[in-house]
Image (tube, rainbow, N blue to C red):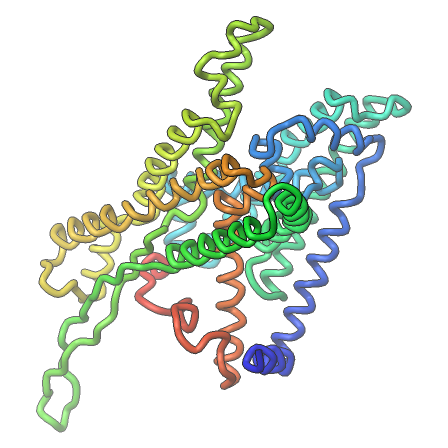
Length: 456
């Protein structure tokens, strides 16, 4: 405890770090305040009543989780930062397939990144207009639109407010990145997820104490703690490929004595794809249930069809296919991110090599083989994490609290917290203070290894 208190004092002593933390907290407070400001003409009680009848893990529940409950309140931040995330994913995928975006990302440096940022912002506005229109239609469908307001005024005014709210949230995230601590967009998503945690925690505590006793609740917390530890290990885990630079001749007065080349390594992450495979798989998993609903119609006999199982996120068919999709998408997304040919070409240009492996095609095949092997445990872990909420829910954990045992929520929370702690760690070490940890992978990890992707 004394070590923790001393570390907090050291953090407060560093003026720049203190100002950045206070600025970040202020921005997050503004964002949370906006989540409670309801759109004009919207009855948020009707929205929340309709939300209570839906599953906690459907697409609307996922959006509500990421927006910190603003979606079910009809808030000005109802869409949250999700349109910006969607736009960023689209631009990232275009960077893999379209030469123009590849050139902007890899060869044009800072000017290319500025162009990509501008394109992403414009695409965010376009996506917000489309999603905002759908959201307002959803409000009307749920009977949450006030009958006293003109429908044209309601639609036109609120679509502007929703678009402004998303753009403002995007601006807040960028300001945190520039003047605060951590990645602003990720922190906004994290704070939205955390906002639903206290209510879910209290509900689970009351339910468990009333039906099973305190020991069961302690076991649940221990399991959650263990899952978080394993998630941190996987997120931080890397396979280091040693590389060596060719020997060079140095010195003029000593007869050009040959010096051994410097050594470094290429870090291959166990979970290079991050949370994206789960997001892609979840988007696909919503389709079969919807198709089953359309095919069933009002026919009660058709309600037991195979596709209707996908409406229940705790069913066996849903989770088996969900697991397989996550594994497949992990390999696909990793293949897009990790290009062995680019690694081999970069090593060749830098006059470096992997010991025991010939440059060129053999290096490319070696990196490709290692990437495939390293991705296997990472993909299986992601698949297990994606279905873990359903597993713990079957054992009696309430649906809201079960979402924090895995899936997108857990990976985002772990990733954002680690990234923020790494930045705080770097400030402490630069000022000659003790870091947050004395051992482990947090210290100095952000700058370790040869970052080939960033260099090209």
